[in-house]
Image (cartoon, rainbow, N blue to C red; front, top):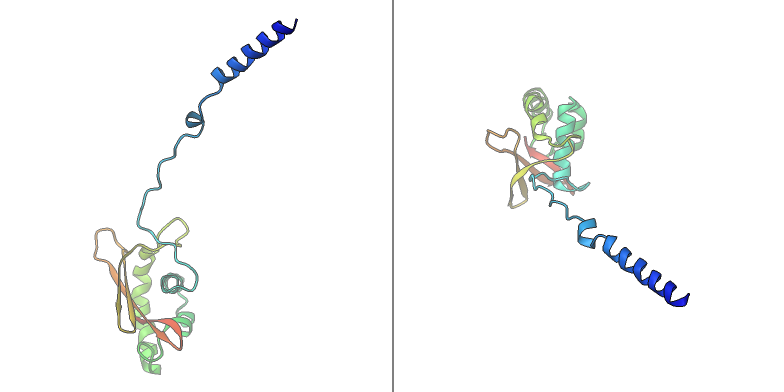
Length: 150
């Protein structure tokens, strides 16, 4: 009886080994993620400032954008300059910058170039696949990144 049990046990073990697929067959390698060049900015980063600012412009929240993101020493230096930014710059940008927001949730940017010039940081965004990248310039104002040019 004992040799029969050993034979059955050995046969069962051999059958288990034969029927168990190799680990490589079970864990098929996945294709690497396609690098689409999109960036999901970290909160507080200059890229995030641009993303959040563009969302405000797209939503037509010009007054909030001016309070939060307009550089007071360069772009919105006087009440007249601020009025002009709101009336002309933001109104024109409102029609265009929605194309700069990428991804299903419009939470990504496609940054084609990043240039630091002294205190300024200029990011070039792809807004139109067939067009030239659009520059957005930031500069620190009271320790916070603000739009210097739009």
